[in-house]
Length: 248
Image (cartoon, rainbow, N blue to C red; front, side):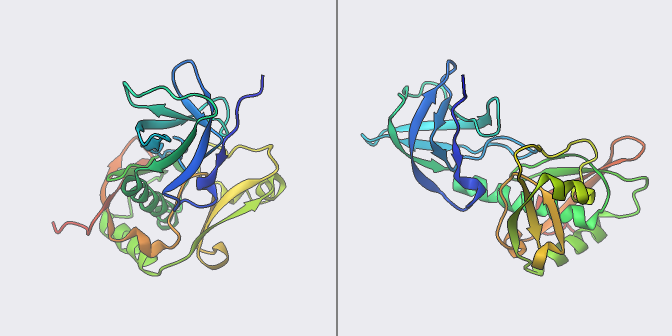
């Protein structure tokens, strides 16, 4: 049986705060699958969106999490406890928690810039609204948090454009350096791979990513490296936090 597929509006426009949608299905655990959604589902280190659905009578169904099912196209909206049940075919007005999402967009874009400042293989990453991390395979900690913050903020203030373009599996195979992760490969086989590009013609950075990002680097705002932690012989964890670097 084919799983229901959702049109992911956030992939084309991450700035959508609300939209109309219809219920396709409700699974056995109460997870709601819509025909279209602006809710990002947990993936690639970025947490899923929260928010609410508004029904025709004006009542709300609070959404506590968004996750994927068997495929990336099966996006499941998880209601908070004790919410009213929805039925297939029901029309809704859906709204994300925009302040939270925008923080995640700014932070996720900053993580991409950090991979420019630290051009080393990525061994792990996690995005959150206030304290994100990117782990690198670095043999020594020659780059301190002050220098890393300075270089990061130079890229932020340069106001580089951030945009999406699609490439083929063959294009990726011909340009393996686009993949910065040491252990995780982007999904292939669909005929198209989504690249997040920064700078004119993507000259600052281009890498496969399915997350949500701001449209220009200046939107990130003030950000700094809060800590660099040693996680093994060659693994360094860089923690990103909003605001200026605290004075020692």
